[in-house]
Figure 1 (spheres, one colour):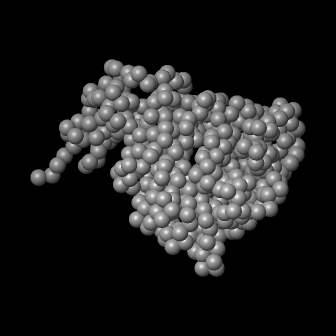
Figure 2 (cartoon, one colour):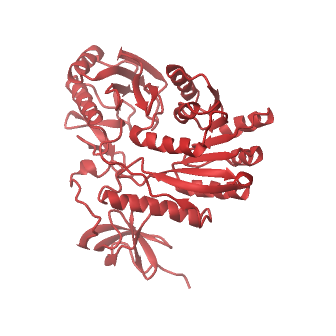
Length: 459
């Protein structure tokens, strides 16, 4: 007999939320059948509408709250705060930290089978708002004026956004000013469906420690109409601007930046610091969007590395050298590897900028380059990995196991793939000593984790 869901689409039902999913939706159950509802918090009683059912689970929409959680906070009701990726902004910051720490503990146990590993309390922010130093927003048109903001979920409809609660005020201001100037100058927005029009995106980057601002105007066309007037107005209205850049992306694509970039005014980079390390940031650079918490994250990674000045260190997935340059201050030699050539160019420039001459950077896939280094006799004492969300490649994990560095420091942006990889390293001779969650992205469901592993013979 075919099993059917105990609820049907368009049903209105009363529920009690029991938990949160990894992406922040409330979980309610009807006869054991889970229904996922955005904006619900554990312990709350509510009326929901069922909007979709599958064989094993369904989705709903919150209609009315009967009883609120003690951790619920009031958030702005306007649409502009609804679609900015802030899935947890209705949850108190204390509640957010509890949710993220619990998530880390659960995946380590469920996926990694690491029952007894020491997980430290999560490191949060004193001020968990307005922390992002970069925004890149799509541009559209409405009532003859340019709009810029976020896409509504599962659509390409732009919600005009005057302020994001997680962007730095200087970034919010820059986006609004550039939008207004381009609108005043009659610049047409890019029409995605017709592949016509000019202005695709506006980007702003801000150096929090230096106060330097970069504006990037991204167009479909090689020409930016009224270019001189736009630049003149930006300089007048945004006195902190140090760099105005024009990027051309003529392709039919959802990738934001194109391959052609030209400086219209000022410098090609702005500068910022993470701790004592200075970074040059170009329009195309990858740079952490929350430098305050990045300093906390990398400080913990440096602590776990336990460097004395005699170690050879490999930094896999090194990006523009952010972790590498932290490590180089305490290590004998650091070797960084990254697949993106432009990132390696930035890493070398940043090493020179800081007078660091014991860091060497190579272009390539970590899972290809590091095994080759191993064959050539480069046996690092400490290996640091900071992979993308998919985690480490199997070949890299096997190389770590074969290479047997005394210490492995694993920096992760995805607790689930971290737990999977820790299990492989544990089975290969490593001991997970301790784990430190860090809240890099308040108001969102994302959590970063730094893990200290030691080779068992040294443990």
